[in-house]
Amino acid sequence: MSDPQIGILMLGIFILFIFLGFPIAFTLMALGIAFGYFAYFDAGRMWRGYERLVEQGAEGWQVWQAYIDGFFNNRIFDLFVNQTYSVMANEVLTAVPLFLFMGYIVERSNIVERLFSTLYIAARRVPGAMAVAALITCTLFATATGIVGAVVTLMGLLALPAMLNARYDKSFASGVICAGGTLGILIPPSIMLIVYAAASGTSIVRLYAGALFPGLLLAGLYITYIVVRSILQPSAAPKPTDDEVGDVPLSKLIWMIITSFVPLAVLILAVLGSILFGLATPTEAASAGALGGLALSAIYRALTWDKLRDSVYLTLKTTAMVCWLFVGSWTFSSVFSYLGGEHLITEFVVGLNLNTITFLILAQLIIFLLGWPLEWSEIIIIFVPIFLPLLEIFGVDPLFFGILVALNLQTSFLTPPMAMSAYYLKGIAPPSVQLIQIFKGCMPFLIFVVIAMVALYVFPQIVFWLPNTIYG
Image 1 (tube, one colour):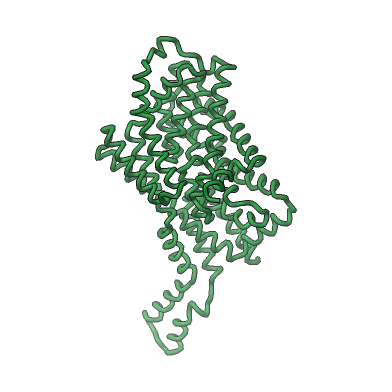
Image 2 (image 1 turned 135 degrees about the vertical axis):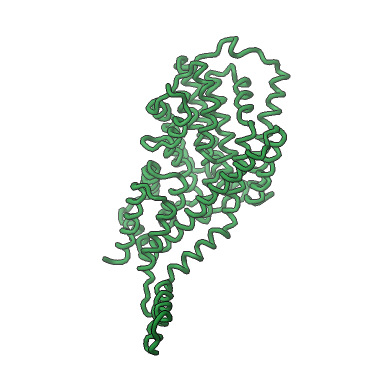
């Protein structure tokens, strides 16, 4: 068996272990070290000291110590240590825990509940007003956190019971929350885009600028669908009665907007704007965002020791997961490339004689299928780097490819059988809401993800206009 074939075997074993439920980060490290030991095996280097001692007539523990030292004198261990250091010293990844902390502390400050109530009152005359308010709240909260599970869970607790009490269709209401909750991995400041930037070497500020319009486009398509369906099918989103809506004076509504919508919007815009216009690096902006989240939590009198402790714990837990995934992935991919597996895949894809569009469609189809068993972090860190060497061959900008992947990954959270958003929502939904109803509600939103991707294929300037305008 040749080295490239061993590399493909390594990839196949990894995929098998994924489906068997093994921890992904540690599986990557274990396979990387095991196959790397074979790839870098050099008997002359490893046991030179042992053989010298034997020739000199040494005996006992000294010989065994030399043998053990020789066993571990393999370059794979040097590679693993260096990759671990490189990940922990990566300045781009420093922004991850800061953005995560901002999201977790905002989640616990009761801002989202106030925001949802205010938006519903402001949009109460719009068809499907409560669903529109829920979608906008999901979008803003997802933008502030980038954590799909947190957004879907919290909005499921706040908005789903309210919509069900307002006689909304269960599938329709569930689909709104699941789709809205996933927008945070696309709309900046997105944790997913930070991870993609670190994995691909793409500028994070250009990625943020490129993702802004596609994210707003997808959110706009979702809102349009909600309004149109509410008009065409009133039973899905019944109009509220006068008693349910009530009459809120304009002065009170303005005050509610100032106290609930404006603070979070200003925080998000300040963080994003400082990055896009070069006023701060992503790490500096994330630091300011974390401090802003703490300040908002204190202003709303929600900053307690327990909430602060929980936010720090969840931040450390998620950050550790991302960092160890990077360590495992870079070790695995380095060995995979050294064995020639990456070159073999490149030759195979090039041999298919695909044009740029068919290559992009094939790549997105593979990522779509990977989204069933895997989380977005695993797809970005492990499998996207396999496609990166092919981008130059097919003339695809890594920026454009990254935005397409971010759009595509919306589907991984919404598509059965492994639609994680649906499972997050089912975990906190009333017993009367069945999982099949949640799946059914997600399906229409998948259509609009596909429409958004087609729009990017046809009009790539949706991605490129803003970064080119700002940065040239």
